[in-house]
Amino acid sequence: MDKHLHIISFDVPFPANYGGVIDVYYKIKALRSLGVRVHLHCFEYGRQQAKELEEICEEVHYYHRKSNRSYLFRRKPFIAATRTSEELMQRLLQDNHPILFEGLHTCYHLDDERLENRFKIVRTHNIEHHYYGNLAKVEKDLFKRYYFLNEVGKLERFERILCNAQLVAAISKPDEQYLSSRYPNVHHISAFHPNNKVDIATGIGDFCLYHGNLEVGENNQAALYLVREVFSNIEVPLVIAGSRPSRELREEIAKHNHIDLRAGLNTEEIHELIRNAQINVLPTFQATGIKLKLLAALYMGRHCLVNSYMVENTGLEGLCRVEDSEKRFAKAVTTLFETDFSEDEVLKREEILHSRFCNRVNAEKLVSLIFE
Image (tube, rainbow, N blue to C red; front, top):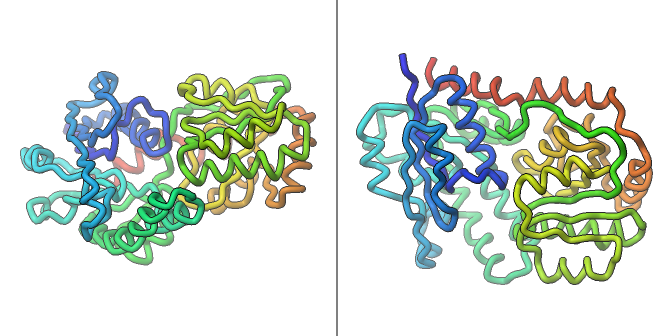
């Protein structure tokens, strides 16, 4: 019997070049490999429609995401209130297939009484009100900070809409624990990602790398921390790669000849940097979800140096060097920069990553929960 699944995506998931859409795109690919016929619905607001999605989906539909700032003053959170479509609802009502809502962002119609008898799944990418609260703490733009703080309470109230889902697929163990205390039928389904095997280059690299979407306050904060508190005190070369770096970050990097900024790179260029770096340095200051850039570094990179927030409750602590003080972080950089990455460490990564983050295993678990 054919298995059909509607997936409602908060954004166009191709190219798969940032955290959330990476999970969506590679989830679709993994489901397709198991014979699931995906009917994809995308809210678009800046990314182009992608023919590549038609190759892995039964059908692909696009809906304009509303952008009027008046939605900031609605009771429902902006990320959900701007993703509504009666056209989408009419398409969903043409059959009885299960529906997967990607993120709280797409859940506006989750409690629509017309979907009352449908099997509905919500993929949670974060505990959104925690995530937005942390974004507000590091945001320096007053309007953005107000926006994040304004959304926190709305998101916390709106989260109760998950009671209308028959299944909640949490992206991390801590998220599963939090959601299980509030909603029924919560399961942990790890992040989907582009890596099928551990593939690490031999030899020693000649730079360290931090990568991320630098427009996000959390990533901007991490990059500034590395420049000001760690690499300003040592002469080890550092490359910071990512889109839309802040003026503040540009000015800080300009003070140091051994720190290089690479902006506007495509996914392949970022992956090449991950492979060639001697150390992927990945601090963060909020332990939310699972950081897909950490998985990329572990599958493709040599040494991975992080702080506790990056690996907290992920099961990946044993694959990384974990340091929390600036001095110990800097000392670890100088040590690892001269240290070969051993074959034993490669084998350890293969064992742990395959058991916990295999796309096919996670897709099989999701299929069994939905269809069996």
